[in-house]
Length: 370
Image (cartoon, rainbow, N blue to C red):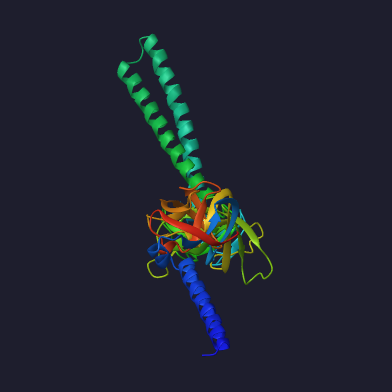
């Protein structure tokens, strides 16, 4: 071969050797298994543990429910004359709901009053008779038996007066109930009596729902159960009122999970002084949860995040990766709150941790910021 050919051949060999060397270095620097086999540092990406404020919005659809239900019962056995409301009607406190026939009660009232007055007069007569027999007894002109009979007659008159007074009072109470009025501002949920029917004592005749305050029963996905807490602020919106937002707060959380939808119900209390929100109205709720100044890492750094063995790889100052158990809190936009197991400033592995083993020597190819 000519000398020039040897020169070209050597140059090509050098280039190929350099490329092979660079390939080997690249494989070692990007493949944990290869790096471990030659006792080199495994390539990873890390981020420092930092304190952040995590703002979480938890959403769910639902419908309005009445906050309070009141059952109204009758106290009189009488015929219904008037029921001026129907199901779905809005009523104000004091509005007439049911009116009964009071003619028989009015007649009974007059009779009871007359009976009371008669017994009062009878007691007065018997009292005078007792005094007369006592006076005669002092003059030895009467008999003890006559005095005793007179005293017994007065006692009977007093007993009759007591019964008459009780009957009068009962009739007066019944007359107080011939008109049933609404005890609150609300909506008629059920009407269980009609004009012409005769009711009996303690019969349920009406069910009302309070509307001054209503509940939004929002269905929330089960994975957010650990995030929803009593007292959290919430905002609700309804297609019936586009552009309007109704503020409220979480007042009740149903712990049961629907096995079909995999949701649980969260109840949001909303002030409803104008009665615009009615039971059955559908809408959407957004519950806001803010965790201030909490330790957080990217969610991809956590292994087994849904189990009890959640862990991360922490890189020590000496460049070795050590697996550490952690307790995870809320997850917000790919960031996870760490409630225990890590300290601020420690470096956790975000890329390459699935291939690491305990105490592997590592080096970071790049550093993720967040």
